[in-house]
Figure 1 (cartoon, helix red, strand yellow):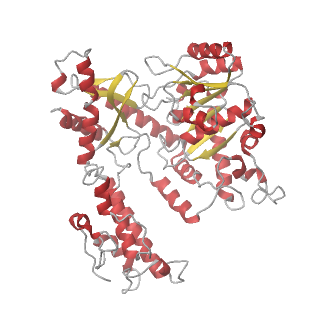
Figure 2: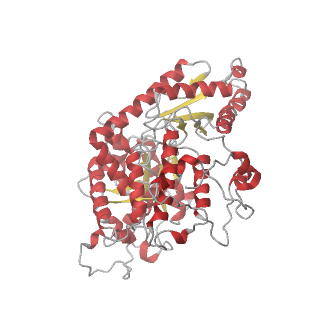
Figure 3: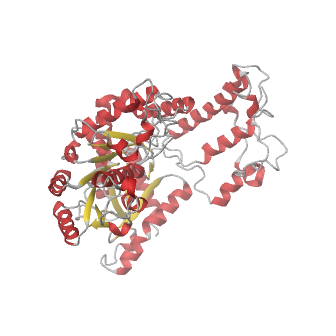
Length: 542
């Protein structure tokens, strides 16, 4: 086995990574390849070896095993470091695009590089990536590194199956059918339809497209030229993807009516009904009402049951975007937040958020059987032959807006299979407990921390008030303008140092505040305390 030496960061920044100018072999950390070669020939070496030495271009498994074992060693090292709570979220901090261009040669080479350089680049990718699975990554709704999901991703990448037909993905299509049926049962629906989509935005697009087809099925064939003047009604705090869906289907965002929520972030049923009546008086047809179960910023749950009764009164499609809060169905302590879900028409639920399933995994569920086929079917004979020897309803490609579709169900199924119903209930309840701990800790740190509201779910929103603002009138424009700059500056310092990431944003008339989301089961109460200390440390001189 050849001697492997570590390439340090200064060598990288000196341009050593540019394959066109490098004359000596690039080097890797010694512990990444040692196990890859011990079980093979002592002369096995990846210098000078290319993709043509790998399966299927070669029938010799030796090089393939060495290469893949080296990759696996890198992944295991990454996971081990990730589990060290005191390690950084971003090694050496976030860099500028030009600095990353110095580390990597992103250009595509005329001739392929050797396998050693592929491994070198792989190591650098893992070393420089933002570690969204780190316990102190409290930045987005999607967090964590779930081992069951990871195992499933490895399997699905290996089988490289396409979900569009049963004949090429029989097990996965049967699995998805069962999982989606169970998710609909949790919604309180006896029958229905659904599919796993690339994300909540696409799931919401499915909902809007399907609602319009349900109201005006002729549009599929004849187009929108002679269709009625239609509008959608949504909460102002709905996810932006609902407005984008209106643009994508040709409705236009000018025909999306936004209803202001109350101070808790919930839209009132009476306000929805008022807008329906106003639209009807103007000769407009409301075909869709969109509300949210767990808003992105505040985590608020709109009153589903109340609004469902209004939509039934006017015969209007009701969609609930539960991309974030849908997993509240998994615990008896939280499922009441979705009371009335059995009365809605469609529901978005993202397991890649609160369930910690790996990206991407979103379900769009319908309380109408076989509706997706009616909306999207094109009967492409070269894929969806009607005279196949099996049950063609499991050819899911013709009911989706995609053709080729990634296998997302296995990571959800394996995680649910491994944790069970009780395990996921405990998972949700633990995250809620951590969120409540964070909220109480922040409240106890007054006057340097100020909470926005008692969190309705897991989202905890608060301001850091540095000493320089303590004696300024909090109703003044000066106070607003200066406070608005505090969270972004602290976030910049966090990312430059690499120690932690916490999200922030403005909302309505509020200046920038932190939105801390603890949806990673690896995040402990100690991590939460460290987060509060870090915010104070980075912000006390501002």
